[in-house]
Image (cartoon, rainbow, N blue to C red; front, side, top):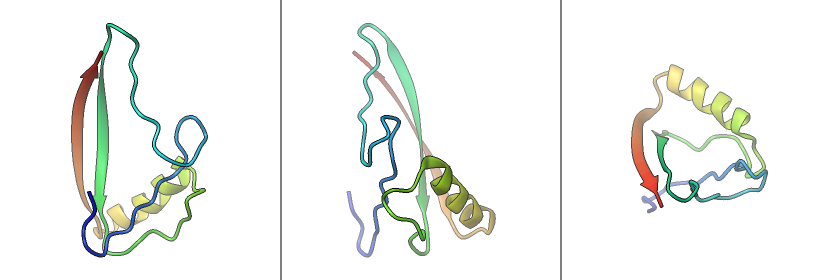
Length: 79
C-alpha cells in the first residue's frame, strides 16, 4: 500500500532485474522470510538501478543517524 507523500524505491532483485521477484520455495518446503521496513524522513538519493549494497549503505547512514523508524516483518511461506 502507499501512504500520502510516500516514495517507492525498487532496487534490483536477486535475478538482477529491477522490480519484485516473488518468493517461491520448492514444493513441500517452508521458508521464513524477513523483511526490514524503513520509514524515512525523506527519499533516498538513489535511482531504480541501485544495487542492494547501495540501498543498504544509504539506509545504514539514515538509520545510524536516528532518522529512520525501522521494523521487521517475518513471514513463513510454503507450498
